[in-house]
Image 1 (cartoon, rainbow, N blue to C red):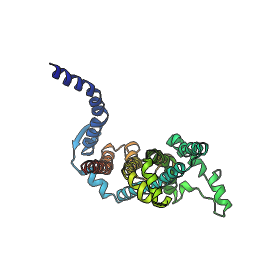
Image 2 (tube, rainbow, N blue to C red):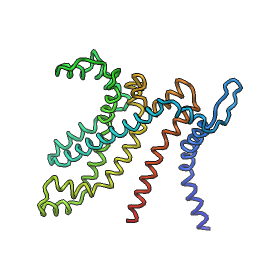
Image 3 (cartoon, rainbow, N blue to C red):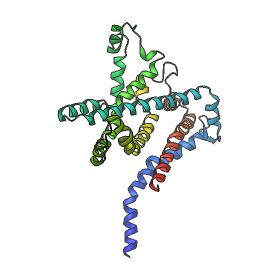
Image 4 (cartoon, helix red, strand yellow):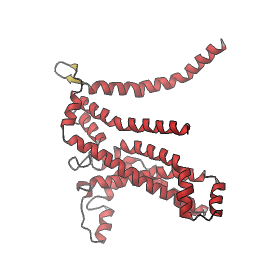
Length: 291
C-alpha cells in the first residue's frame, strides 16, 4: 500500500511538468512537423499531405543556402568573440583585488545584458543612423565618410557587434563564477613551483575550467543560433537578404507571405542543428561521467 501511494504521489508531482511539456513543447513540435508535410487548399479549405514537397521547394531556392550560411556565420563569429571577450572580462575582474574597482567593473560589464534586446537594438540603430548617430560622428573625426551603416553591406556585421556587446556579459558571469570556485590550494602550489601568471592560466586554470567552458559555449551557441530580435529590429533581414538567417526567413514566410507550410519546413530545418548540438553535449557529459 505504501509503495502504491509513493508511485501515485510521484506521478502527481510529475503531472504538472508532463502537462507543461505536452502543451508547450510536444504539441507545437508535432504541429510544426505536420504542417511541414502538408499543403492547405484555401478554396476547398482542405489540408493535403504532400510529403517532402515543401522541403524540396526550399532547397530548390538558391537563397536557402545563403540563409543557412549566414545563420552559421552569425553563430560562429558571435559565439567565438563573445566567449573571448567574456573570458577576458572574467580574468580582468578576477585579477583585481580592490573591492570598489571590482564591483564597478562588474556593474559596467553586466549592464548591457540587463537591457532588453529590442531596446538594445533600438539604441544601436540610433547610434548607427547616418545623420544623428554618434558612431558616424566618431568615424568622421578619423576621416571616415558618413554612411547609413544598416543599409550598407556591413549591416550584418554591425548586428553581430550589437549581439556581442549585449551577451558577452553572459559568458562573463559563467566564467567569473567558475574562477571564484577554483581551489586555492592548487593555485598556491603552482605559484610555489614558480609558474608565471600566463603559465598558471594555460596549464592550471584553463584545464580545470574546461568543463565549464564547454557548457558556456554550448549554451551560448544554442542561444545565438536562434537570434532574431537584434537582426529583426536593426535590419529586418536587409538590405535585400544580406542579413536574413533561417529564423528571419521562417518568420517572413509565415507572417508576410502567409505560407505556414513552407515556414514550418524552414522551422524543421532550423531545429536540426540545435538537436544535433544538444545530443552531442549529452553524449559528451555521459562519456565524462564514466571516465
